[in-house]
Image (tube, rainbow, N blue to C red; front, side, top):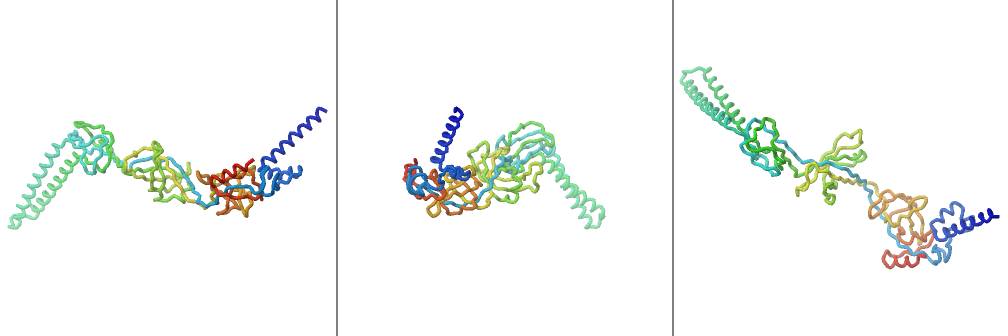
Length: 387
């Protein structure tokens, strides 16, 4: 007898649970109908529990009141985010081309210099003397050449002698050029316009040939090297714009432009090296900074619905569509989620359809609905009809 009472009690609990589930969770009725439980219990799943047909609300009557929004269409965006390394548009390390003592240093750490400005002078007394001697030899060679030409006109000298003086004059000219070049090597000019780094050099220091004097950086533009997956190879193009944010300044968003694309996909990472550039008019960026790069590529057109319209069942996401005054459940596939809309794919959904955003709690397939405008009063009306 004790076992029979336990069995009866269990049956009563299960029956009560099914009753509560069927009555107050109408969304579960399609699942129970497929399992045959509604037929076993003799419950009509398509008919309202109480009230007139089409309402589908416990304790209610008439059509269900809902708010809808129109299904739109948007182009799906393929987004790529990468971390890139920034470097200056140009950066030149200036080295000494001669041995000597620094006599003049006309720049300061962190300053800006124009191209062609003399920034370092070396002691040049020896080279100045050598140039003066070469010029004296040149004047002497010119005088000798003029004298020999006069003698040749009188017929008192030979052609060989004239040729010797011409060669001596040419050698003297080359000696002057050599002395001028040696003197010019005692002055180092800025090869580009840009900003000077920290200088570890003082007036009076002795430098050797190829010693580093200073580094000049042109950061009017910052070049950013980053990698994209190989699936983007067919979409990425030179001149395409992208959004970039310095990791040190996450709230600062700039617009860059792709300037170069590598020709080989890396086999290890299956990525392609891309170079972009971003203007640095405000001199906010520095070479060596890390950047977050965001690229967007347009894709296929998809249906766009509000996130409020998406419902979930045991089979996945779906929406309620209002057609000819009745609700219809349509299964959808979520392709992309955005902040303001959800892009979906569905066989039985089209642009311009009306999907329910409020009042979905009491809907069933075929239920009649009353569509209200999406305003405050409509929302209040729906709230008042809910059990």
